[in-house]
Image 1 (cartoon, rainbow, N blue to C red):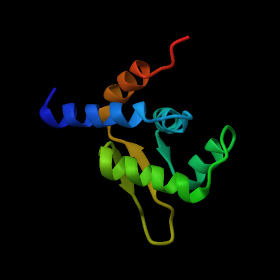
Image 2 (cartoon, one colour; image 1 turned 180 degrees about the vertical axis):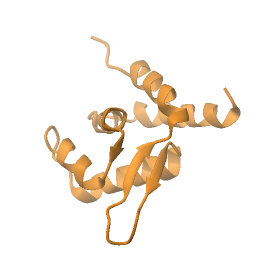
Image 3 (cartoon, rainbow, N blue to C red; image 1 turned 120 degrees about the vertical axis):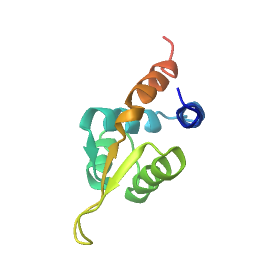
Image 4 (cartoon, helix red, strand yellow; image 1 turned 60 degrees about the horizontal axis):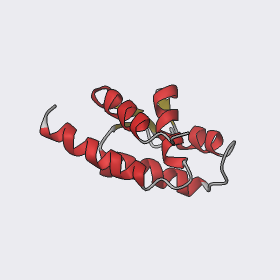
Length: 105
């Protein structure tokens, strides 16, 4: 792996270690599963299991995009919602980090 991927892997592991209630893991799993999400879609999915605010979901996606650097962001025009998707080169890194941080039963 190249140095950038190693740094992102470490950031991702720390990010998941601080996940107390499982929201961060669920967000990453949903990104893996759905491929492309908007804040609205993610908010609806998260509210099926957790009580979270719309702004908390938006800030979570913003954090993942800016600090972890694993998301593509696309906005067609100012009238359309922002679409987030995982960068392909980090899919395996994310899967490995999620299985590494899976709760032990």
